[in-house]
Image (cartoon, rainbow, N blue to C red):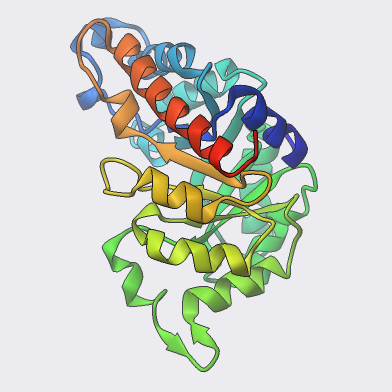
Amino acid sequence: MNKNQLTEAILKKKSYLCVGLDTELGKIPPHLLNEPDPLFSFNKLIVEATSDYAVAYKINTAFYEQYGKKGWESLERTLEIIPDDCFTIADAKRGDIGNTGDMYAKAFFEHYSFDSVTVSPYMGKDSIQPFLNYSDKFTIVLGLTSNSGSADFQMLQTPEGKLYEQVLSKVASWGTPEQLMFVVGATRSDLIKQIRKRLPDYFFLVPGIGAQGGDLKEVSLEGMNSECGLLINSSRGIIYASKDVNFDEVAAANAKELQVQMQQFLQLKNIL
């Protein structure tokens, strides 16, 4: 899915919701544990319940890697049932140089056919370039993250501004808005307006809404550009909203509630 197709999906569904599939056996409804592949069974019901309201799904690979071979099989099966009109994100936070970077890119873009993958820019351009070599895919670069430890490095003052600001500008010079997105945490909504001015045309993947305390309205109104330019991720607030047998119905209701709010913000910004 390219940038134009993603924007079309946002306009069609009146939503910029990304559902995070951070699936753990200890948190899914107990009745699913008897299934041959509980992770997949849970994900399938979540995807079926929310795909009318979501434009993207983010699969955090760590939640599957922990289960070894079976976890990777669950991940692959999950990816296969995500509808074609939804953008897929491998939240893998990779980043390495040379052949290692090439293999990471090949794994997620060729073997698994994700639309995008998250990467760390710490090692510089030659750790990002293997992903940018895929012109029909997106590289989502960690920009300003929502964890408390982000202040350890990202907020350090440099002669040209904060370190995260230099990272954003430098990385943006390596690729176009058709190739690059940036992770911008919702808990730093006070800075999203400034980041949007710095990067007017790029999509932002925004975690931290809901359980982490991010404010959807503030992030939306400060972070949108003329095409929306946002993917707001919600994981726990949707997929773990209930452990009852009808958990998927509760997930659908929560996803719809977010979609309705997003539609209002899209209208306020004259995007719809």
